[in-house]
Image 1: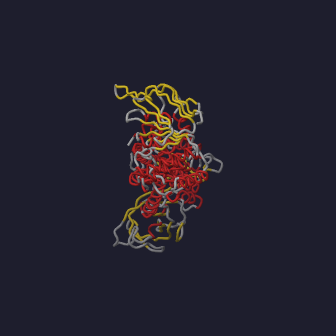
Image 2: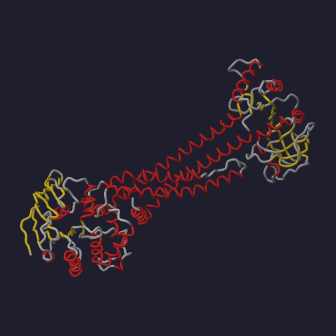
Image 3: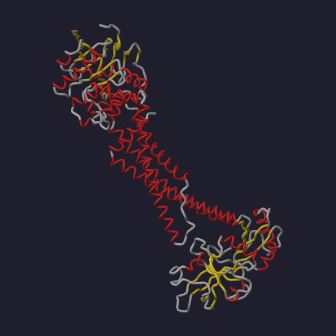
Length: 230
Length: 405
């Protein structure tokens, strides 16, 4: 396996204030993700896996500790800078797909490129290419509401790839899908990993889904309790 | 700035059609009101500029002071006054205008009406001053001439049937003026307001024949010599006439104005009135601004999750800001376009209606600057009102927004 570390969390704490009570979602989490790796993070609900995922995806900054993305410390960056980094380096896939319902499939895929100021013709071409790749070439101008869950998630996969990111973060990508459609989505993820060499970090609570990954880290109470390599 | 973002903004307005249209309606009303009022204000300015040019700026007007608010003079100006003014250095020609009221009827069986009877000179040079100030020429028939006594020239409206009298009056017809038979010799062109277009004109001799000798003047008009400063001359005339009439300073029973001042006085009153109305209309635009703000706050709240998604896929705070400000600006612009269109319709209709009522000088004007200005104003109001909600949207934390359902 390639040993280059692409994401590194060092002693990361995340504390939320719920009224007078402090809730520690992460308690000194340390984690390394290597380039080209397929990593699953598992844990029961409330274990902090979503928080960890947000940290890795630059959606949130830690209360304490450091996060390095490609060797760069992002834990103290300003929101706009973070937005730029995640737009370019990270692609998100969510459990609830999170497509914009007012836009068509193609427009949804073009949007991340819009935020990166990519030229219009290029956006158009890339979006069509990606839709073909997820086998939705015939659904380009459909709105998310006119598509099945599996189709929506494939649009989301295509969207996550639009800026050609190094890392794909998938938060329960099959959680809202039946097992058959879920498998298909997982197949796409595996293909991305194998054929495109993408680094994939996937959060799941489903053991069978996690088995698809090369490595699984188990999270409990905001800290890694065990890991498993395949 | 990306054109896609603008298109997305416009699209999202379309998905919330009802709310967007109501907001647009509120802007429409405000912009329409402002557009309509300003178009009349501008029309008035244009009219004043035109008549100023027509009447020339070389004239002075000397009038007796009136009692209180009534247009009844304390003491008319006399022929002696007029002769004295004529001798002031710098004055070229002077003429007085008698203004009385008279009973007019086409024949004994018709119910009489009361209008202004104007007596004026038959001297060519002096008559020119009067005609220039009235900005009209003869429409038909002939002008009054020396020796005319029981002859009248009438205002334009007498020619129209069902305007002043049921039957239109013609040149050559005999009518009754204060129960005395007079002959109509001509008609003036339309001045553009129903009062002046109902005037009755006679020679001095005619008025005196009708109302008795020694009629004074309500209006004395003078033309200054070319190259003379009317303003300086008006002060000089005022001073000299005061001494001639042996009146104490500050207790004069007359006043002198350049014609320019008279027009300005009239216009100022109209413009102030117009400005007050525009201010009131501005309040409605302000209210529509609040309406836009409210709409946008709701929109931001509704799309909290979308904002989170957009941030997750790389939208910078500035991108989100632009999206929402654009959306508000587009709301304003659409309202502005509709407001200008409806305002144009209303102004044209209102202009036509007051024209029908005889006030043809009250015509709206639609210069390009008014149209573009209105659209810009609407857009800026929209974008400005959308700024605070947009800032709120842009500052949302992506994690929190994503969790929002």
